[in-house]
Length: 175
Image (tube, rainbow, N blue to C red):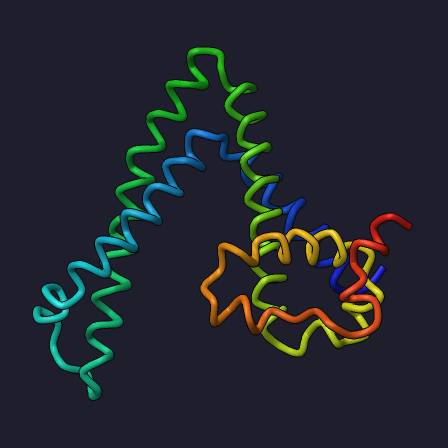
C-alpha cells in the first residue's frame, strides 16, 4: 500500500463517515449552499467589495467580499438544514437520512479522488514511485481517461499518465 492508496481510503472513508453523521438532507443543502454561494460571490463581489475599505492592494477587498458572500451563503444553508434535519429525525427517518447520507458521502469521496487524479494527470505526479506502485491508481486513471472527451481540449491534450504501468492501467486492473 502506497501513500496514494492510504490517502484514497482516508478521503473516501472520511467523506462517507461525515455524510453518515450529518445525513443526506444536511449534505444536499450544504452542496446547494456552496453552489449558490459561489455563484452569488461571482455575481456580487464587485458590489460588496465597494463597501469594504481598501487594505493595500485593491484585490484584497474583493477577496474579502468573495469570502463574506460565500460564508454568508453557507451559514444560511446551515440555518435551513438544521431544522429540516431535526424534523426528519423526529419523524423517525433518521436512519434513512443517515444511510442515504453515507451513499452521498461515498460518491463525494470518489469524485474528490477522481478530481485529484484528473489534475495529477496534468502534472508529473503520475511518474512518482508512490503513484506507480499504487493499487488504487489504475481504476481512477481508467475513469479519468474515459472522461477525456468531455474535458476542455487544452486539458485533454495535456492529460498524461505515461510511465511504465500508468498507461497500461487497464492491464493492471485485470491482474
